[in-house]
Amino acid sequence: MRFMHLGDIVGKPARDLIRQRLKTVRQELGLEFVTANAENSAAGSGINHAIYNELIDAGIDCLTMGDHTFKRKEAIAVLEGCPRIVRPGNYPAEAPGKGFVVFEIGMGARAAVVNLQGRVFMQPIDCPFHAADKILRQLPKDVKVIVVDFHAEATSDMQIMGRYLDGRVTAVLGTHTHVVTADEQIYPGGTAFQCDVGMCGAMKSIIGRKIECVTEATLTGRPVAYDVADEDVQLHGTIVDFNPLTGRAEAVERLACS
Image 1 (cartoon, rainbow, N blue to C red):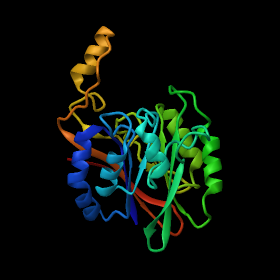
Image 2 (image 1 turned 180 degrees about the horizontal axis):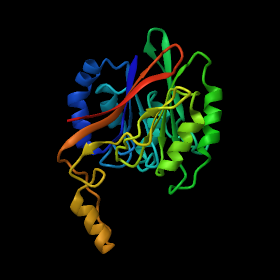
Image 3 (image 1 turned 135 degrees about the vertical axis):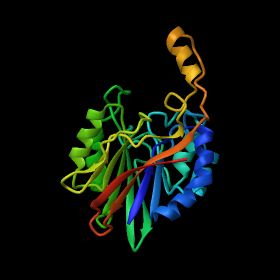
Image 4 (image 1 turned 30 degrees about the vertical axis):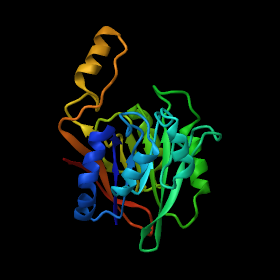
């Protein structure tokens, strides 16, 4: 069996391409389920109820979030009322939403999707490693397939998480930087790992935003709206083949398509 995790969905251009292409990609690749990071899906920052429905209807089974989770107040209702979305599990316990979700994937198997957020070069937050341990203790014993979206800035932070969870989860796949890393591999314990799976968005951009906007803000220090770019839009993600009985990863590869 195999699944795919898509990188950060940046605005409407990426959502449009997902609507147009994802169901065909799922069929061609024989994917049992698809997950995606959606924290940038609403005009580049946050999510709302309409976009949640749009992405689920397009063929995504579970959405993950990150440091832009609460950029829009509409996200609170989504996190509290929608079943296929998770926010970082190391947010305070009082935060709306949940840090993991479990769903059926076929052949009598179930998968868990876990969301965690890093701390290096990011906002102060609870320890993601202790949060991971707590979540794994809460998962039903029969759930062998466990996918972790680690939303982090530093590759060292990502690698520590991958090694820490090796043998305990099916995959640790990074998001947040919007830049694909070429380090996909399977660790000795059977966990697929990649520092960052990239983004779904415009390649003619600066991490999905219009080049001229980001350049002006950088050179002048003026407050400039970071408009979402829309040229050469691609889907970037990572495919993992896994054994549904053991949860061990058997193969991992990058995907880029337009």
